[in-house]
Amino acid sequence: MASVRLQELFVILQQEEYRTAQQLADHLGVSEKTVRIRLRELNDELEKNGARIASKARFGYRLEITDQERFEAYQKECEGEESSQIPDNASERSDYLLAYLLFRPGYVKVEELCDFMYISKPTLSNCLKLVESILKRYHLSIERRPNYGIRIQGEEFDIRRLISDYFIKRNCLSGFDISHQDKELSMLADLVKALMTKYDVHLSEISFENFVNYTYISQRRIRSGYYLKLDKENLIEIGVKEQSFIRELIGSLEAKEGIHYTSDEENYLLLYLAGKRMIGNMVENDSNFVINERTDRLALEMLKLAAKEYHLDFYNNFEMRMTLNQHLVPFDVRMRYGIPLKNPMLQEIKEKYSLAYQMAYIASNVLRDYYKKEIPEDEIGYFALIFALALEKGKADCRYNILVVCSTGKGTSRLLKYKYEQEFSDYLKNIYVCDLLGLENFDTSKVDYIFTTVPITREVSAPIIEVGVFLGVDDIQKVTDILRYGNSGGMIRRYYGEKRFIRNVPAGSKEDILEYICQIIKKQEQVDEDFYELVLERESFAQMDYGNYIAIPHPNRIASEESFAYVAVLNEPVIWNNLPVQVVLLTSIGRKEDRDRQRFYETTARFALNADSVSRLIQNPDYNVFIELLQK
Image (cartoon, helix red, strand yellow):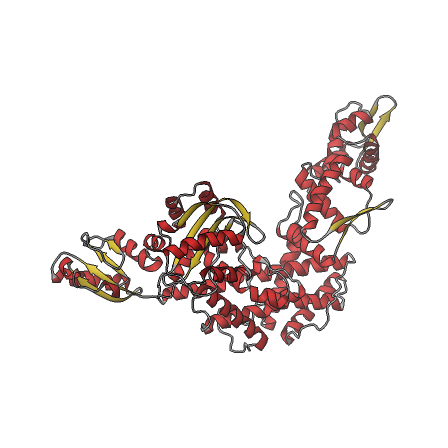
């Protein structure tokens, strides 16, 4: 049976009473003309299966069975049928219409679409609006031509992107039998895997799936007579094994499908593979990897910019430089030929590795300048993983000096020191032990944390953490968290002191607001005379657009003795660069060495990328609320 509505018409006519064309049209929500067309279609099918549609003037139509046995067999076949069915709700109907327009050659008239989908012109018009909103995201449109109808207009490459996203990855045609598609994709995946092994070509799981999907779509489009045109000159040189891989793949597909790949289609498939592949096996070091001078220069410039911006030593990180080089080779292919790479982990990366994402965004300014185009968020997310790895390794290499204070004798003190060595050796450099009396003569500036079994009332220079005498399970977890993640509460209040929280800042230009904040800073902090000018200078460079009503300005170089951060909540939002801003978080890294610098950046980035946290601060501009949000 061709569609849901045809089946419905079939069911109505089995009710042993005549129905007029108008009654049928009212029931189905279509015109009388459409009903008569469908009645003819249904009658043609029924006459081959033991029945027919009888008509009687002034009475209408009803079903008449001519061969009971054949008709019953036909009914059973219809009940088990899972062929294409036109959906009834707006969303699924729009997806169906989109697929119909994508896969139908030439123009199609509106009347024909209405009849085909059993819908009225107003309903079709609403469907087309939804379809056009989807097409716009892929740089496609609907072309309307009088007396011809409508069709989808745009580049074949963009059409293939849409097909991949909607009808392969998301399977928007829910309720339709796509078992043949799944089977074909599975067979193609097996072929690609075999060729990967044969030619030693490495693809990540995501890239493998993307490549298989793209190849499947290309063969279907070629089968339907649609070809890509690659209007590019000076194609990059691609390795011999990749060329052999693609030639054998195409040879297999041409023999199996009876199709022909043009040189443009072959070159694009080759570029797609080059843009997705991994340079060497990322699990092991590839001794055959050769650094390209241009690629290495881009990697160094990215590291240099990140190091300058965040005052963290990436510039001399050779391992990170090599990882960037490896990633930049396929990235270069994707950027130059417009090959998209989806990043399904993007939101998780932003949430879990906020600082790394922020660094990657800033560092990618080097790439924006080089390629003269915006870098997709999905790509920035993958660069963020490289920065995240470096940041995590930096944490692992950080060891602390601690002082353990207890009120018991030397024997217990030694036992306690031994327990700390056993439990926390991965995080510790030196462990000192003393009692309360010995604390008076101890130089606390040489330790990062003081863990004590007794209350300490005197002022010391290191954070104090109280623990139990016997270092129980809860104490061990508490100490581990502090040594691994830091004493965030103390660090936060040290950078974001209460005097550095400014509410009810009058709205104005970006320059006015920065001048207002910098005047307060000059009164309260030891900063260079040109502090405001240095902040303005940094603002002239590319900024991180958070889109969360927050901006994070800072000086273009180190311009203060201590590290600090000022938070200003504006009375109303103002346009900062291109987006509205109502929270200004002005940071300054000091000249004094600070082991908490990375955690400060991480805390700040996590807050800035959390739209809900920024919104809550705007609604309730209170210092304690802000501290609570930073510790989330």
